Every structure is written in structure tokens, then in C-alpha cells.
Image: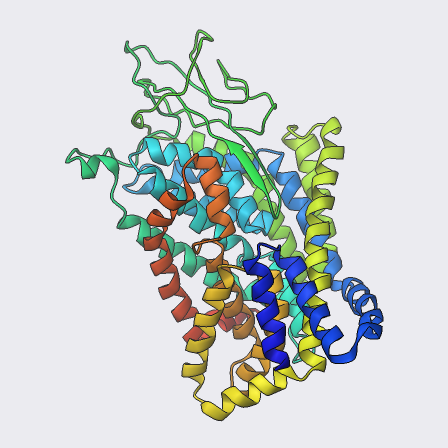
Length: 525
């Protein structure tokens, strides 16, 4: 009865349009009042505040700050430039560029929606110009962004380690390392899905230009003189909201490669000859700006010198995950200290290396980081109250006994839990879902012989897929806003990526070595 009241009221509040965090708190309070009366409400602050005082959770604001700072430094553009020079020349190369850029930006931001916003403003217009339908371009970026909570550093892994600690020992370091191989498998799955996505010219019976196309592409010039172009796109994101403006671009017949240039709103962008201000438009060598245009990708062959230049520009950003994982694995600092180091390093890169983060921007950066952190920590507080009710009312033990009484077959139980998490992940964020289900599911999985590392990774990947699962996957909303497309269209385009992601999830779930191999190889306990 208590179980039905707790979860029934929670889903009723969700159906009424109440935000997840408030639905968690209200359903927990409803059960407490029903069972023990109003006098028990004094337990609410005594449960919520201690849950927020964990030293481990202190890593969250630092990683959030590091990710937001890097959004202001243009690192996403530099990662795209580097990936494009390596893979852009191949067939479906732009899809590979999108996935690889998302993978590496995930290692910086630790957030799915932030990853979608950062790379989407650059790559969604480029994918469309390269022949992809808008719904598939947005879907590819939305799906790729889900790696943000799997590839370390992951806020989801930090939360899992904190909540699951009462059921068994699991270190954040091990979870971070364990997420690398599943992240790669997800990336491969998304690329395979992209191979089966038709492009507009294929549908029209026309040949598709090879992946050698330049990202900065658009209307073919009237003459054969090379006009160098630069495009500026605005993008900002937090853990809960994101908005961006996508830019059009002009073509070039010059043989020398020129990569798409993009930056945050209001920041000056420059090339050797010309630049546009933030927004949508095309600037030719003469400095004239035109409106938004579309077209095909221009051919480009990047030289080794251009590759080295792009690599040098991207190195400061690429060093952040190296510093985080290398420092933690080397025993130089804890995950919390790693977050602080990453934040300071990101600030130094933005202010003194890339010089795109200006001193007047710092109050805005810190405010955005503070708001994002406050949202996360509020969810942690109310979700911990919900988890407390599950524990003290014996709900977890009751459900565990009932499930194991029906079957103790590990594979059947994993299949059932996978279905439950896929459904829940489409409606509830990962942090809330962990507090909802870890007290119930972890004891069951441990009882049938699933190790804690595999549990953490497989639950996180499940909920990562939920970020782009209709109807309310957050990445879908972010991508639709950037691509200026109705959500219904995005949902029609997401299915190939969703199917391939679920297949990858099954491998990760039923092959524990995928999660445990790298941590065991490195001796991470």
C-alpha cells in the first residue's frame, strides 16, 4: 500500500505537469504525513541537508564550472576543426566529426544537454548543408550528446557512487575509468546508425558529394574567385536549459582549406582576411555580408600543416580530461580536487591562452554555474528524501523479496530492469532516477551476482539513452531549438539512433567485461 502511494503519487504529480524535483519531494512528504502525521515533517530538513553536505558532491560545482567556462572559450569549435581535418574527407565523415566532437566535449562538460548545445550550433547547419535531412541532423547531435553523462568526468557517476555507497564499496575513480569503453561503444553505435540514414540528394536520386566537403559551405559563388568565409554561431547551455542560433555560410572555390569558424554570441571571430559578427550571415573577402543561405559542401583537402595548427589550438581543451583522469588515477588528487583543478585550468585557458573569455564575462559565468549547481543540488536534496522514505518504509526490501521470489535468473532480471529504466529515463533525469531506483534495484542486482561497476555503468547508459528518448528527452528539446524544427519531426528522425543505442546497451549490460576490463587493467579499485 505504501509502495503504491509513494510511486502512484509521484507519477500523478508528473502527469499534472509538476516538475520532477517537486514531484519527488511532494510524494515523499505525502507518504510521511500519511504514515506518521504532520509531526514527522521535522525529519525533512534533517534528511535533506546532510545529503547535500557530502564532500564527494563538492566535485559537482567544480565540474559544472569547468564545463561552462569551456563553452565560453570556443573549445567546441576547435574540437570540430581538428576532427574535421582528420575525418571530414571520408564518406559520412561529417557524421563521424559530429560523434567524435561530442565524445571529446563530453569529457569536458560532463553534461548531455550542454554537449548538444555546444556542438549543435556548429554541426547541425553543416550536416544539413551536407545533404542530411534536418530531422536526422538534429537527431544525430541529440543522440551523440547523450555520451555526456557516460564519458568521464560524469556527474551521474558521482551521484551513483554517493547513493550506492550504502550497498557496497565503489569508487568514483573506477566508475570514471569504467565509462570510457562503453562511451566508445555508444559512439560506434551512433556512427553505424548514421550510415543507414539517407541524405536528401540520395532521396532525390542525385549523387551525394563525398565527405571532403568543407564545413563552411553554402551558396556557390557567381565567379571562380575564392571568397573566404567565416561564420559565427551563438550557443549557451546549462544542465536544464539551452538556446542557440545557427549560422548560414557561403561557399568557396579556392583550393586551400578554410574551416568553419564559430564562437559564442557577441565574441569577435577573425580569420586571416575576413570575419562576421555573431549571428547569421556570410562575409566575403570584400567584407559584404549576405543573409542565411544553403547549399552544398565545398571540396577541401587539409594539409599536414593545417592539421598541426588545429591540433595545437585544440590541445589546451583536450588536456582537461587528461588532467582529470591522469591526476585521479595517478593519485595526485581526489575527484573533488580534480574538479577544482579543472575549473582553474579552464579559466586560465579561456583568459590567457584562447583569450575569448573576457574578465567582464566572469560574473555571468559564475552566475550560470551557480544556477546550474543549485538546480542539481536541489534535485539531490529532495531525491534523497524520497530515497529515505523508500528505505525506512521497507519498500526496497519488499520489492527485492518479491522480485527474487518470482525469478533469480540474472539475465531475466537485467532485461526487466533495462526496460524499466528505459521507460523511466524518458521522463526523469538521471540524478532523480538514481535516488528513485538505486535503493530498490541495487540490492536485487547484487543478489543475482552483478558487480557494482557493471550496475553503475549499465544504469547510467540506460538513463543516457533516456536523454534522447521520446517524448520528453531533454536532448531532443535542445536539438530542436537549435535546429529550429518541431519536436515531432525530431522524434521521427531519432529512431535509427535509438535502436542502435539499445543494441549497444544490451552488449554493455550482458558483457560485464566491457565495464570492468579497463579499470581492472589499470588496477583501479
